[in-house]
Image 1 (cartoon, each protein chain N blue to C red):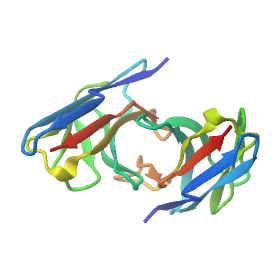
Image 2 (cartoon, helix red, strand yellow):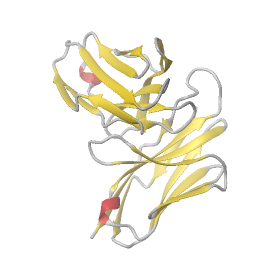
Image 3 (cartoon, helix red, strand yellow):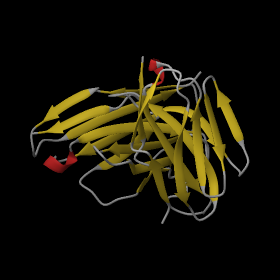
Image 4 (cartoon, rainbow over the protein chains, first blue to last red):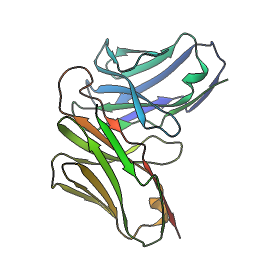
Length: 111
Length: 114
């Protein structure tokens, strides 16, 4: 069966520091991978998606970037965090145009 | 622009008191409508996918239905463990960038009181 791992679960970072969140999927090949952000009182917002190694699409302009160095690895990064980057970050995967399955999320607080 | 509106924002039910959650959507051609359950501090858990009007899916005390403009999540005889936020999302059947995107509603927070 497929599983998705996302870490860390919580993170407190100072403004201006770098960020690296990692997500890996097991039990499937060539999945679509996604990074979402969930802010209080708002729906999930798609930040990035990838349909293959090295293929990244961004849905919104922002202070963040994503990379897919391996088939089942997706990384969310920032060179310098802003206060507004605080939120709940979720990694997800799907097989083509099907339901997405989410990781347990990372609660990021920028102070 | 695809839009999803869920109502009510919050719902309190007594254990055993059946009710329905609403998800209204506007999308340029629906590829699929998805229901998720989210517990506090956790990632959303997939429940159902509906593809066409008239389709119904069931799982334990939950039943999801779909029309051309909205979807309902019916909860029959709920238990306290059904307490969670229920999220609805749509995927549009258009090509090009963003075609994999799920557009989510803000969710309905369900509390089931013993």
